[in-house]
Amino acid sequence: MRKKIAILGSTGSIGQQTLEVIRKYSNEFEVVALSGWENTNFLKEQISFFKPKIAVVKDEDIAGKLKKNLNKQNNIEILWGTQGLINISTLEEADIIVVAITGIASLIPTFEAVKKGKKVALASKEAMVVAGELLVKEVKLRNAKILPIDSEHSAILQCLKNEQKDCVEKIILTASGGALYDLTETALKNISIEDALNHPTWKMGKKVTIDSATLMNKGLEVIEAKWFFNIPANKIEIVIHPQSYVHSMVQFVDGTILAQIGEHDMKIPIQYALFYPNRMINNFSRLELTKIGQLTFKKPNFKKFPCIKLAYQALEIGGTMPAVLNGANEITVNAFLNSKINFLAIPQIIQKTMKEHKPKPNPNISDILDADCWARERALSFCTNNK
Ligand code: MN3
Image (tube, rainbow, N blue to C red):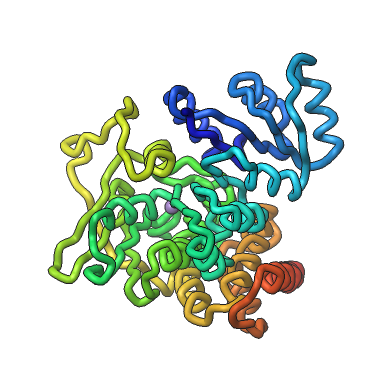
C-alpha cells in the first residue's frame, strides 16, 4: 500500500523538492492533495503529473481559472482559502501532511492536522514558533506526530535517535551567518536588498533569506528546537559555521558531540521526514570531505545581530510573546524588502513592538492569532514612522 500524501505549499521551494523526492519513490507514495495558492500555471503542471484528487488555491476566482485550464477529463476537486487548506490537512485518507506554506497561514492547518492524529512533516517554522506549546500538547493528546523538515532540526532528530533524553547536555544549532555576517554596523545600515538576498550557501525564498541575514532565522529555530525536542532554551546554543555542512549537533553528558553532516540539499531532510524512522537509498549528490578541506566554527555576535537575543527573550517570556516576535518580524522583513526601512531597523522595530506587548500566558489559538494581528499593526505603524 502506497502512503498517501497531502502537500500544503506544493509550488514553493520545499513543496517542489518534496515532489521531486516523491517522484523518485513513486512506489512508496501517492499524492492525494496539493495546494498552490496563486501560482496556477505551475500547479497545473503538478496536477497533470501527480494527479491528486484535490487542489487548493487562494480564492474562488483563481479556482475558476485553474478549472478552465485543466483537462476536461480531470475530475479533480478544487477548493480555496483557509478552509480548503484545512480540508486537505485533515483529509481522512491522507497518511502524511507536508506543511510548507510560509507565514502564520501554516498555523491552523497544522493544528487541525494534529487534532486528527496525522503525521505532519513541518517545513513552516511559524506554526511551531507561535504555538509550539499548544501543538506539542495536542500531539501527545491525539497520538499525532510532527517531524521537522528544517535541516537543523532534522540533524538534531538524527543525533537524538536511540539516545536517552536525560543524557543531553545541550543542542548546538549551526548558523551559516547569512550573507552579511562579516560586515560592520555602518555597512549593515546601508545594505541593499540585493546584497541581503545573496545567501552564501542555501538557495531559499526571500523571507527566510533575509531572516538568515538578520540571524532571526536562527532565533526562530531556537524556539522551534525547544518545542520539537523539549529542551530548555539555556541548553540550546548557536554556533556560526559558515560552510553549513554540519547541520547541527547534540552534546551529551559524557562530553560526546554527535553531528549530522551532509550536502546543502533540502531533499535529504525531506526524505528523512517522509520515511522516518527509516533510511532509504538515493542518488543525491554526496559530500566529499577532502574537497571541503576544513570546517570552521565561531561564536555568534549578539551585539551586531540582536534578533537572536530577541528570540531567546520571547521564548523566555513565553505565552503570546513568540507570536509577537514572529508577526513583527514578518512585517519588518517585508518593509525592508519594499525599501521602507533599513536593515538595522528590523530588530529595532521588533524590539519596540515586543516592549509594548502584554503577553498572555497559556494562550489558545485565537489568543495567538490576536497577538499576531496586534503585533503586525503595531510594527507596521513603527515602519511607517521610521524615516
Ligand atoms: Mn534551517
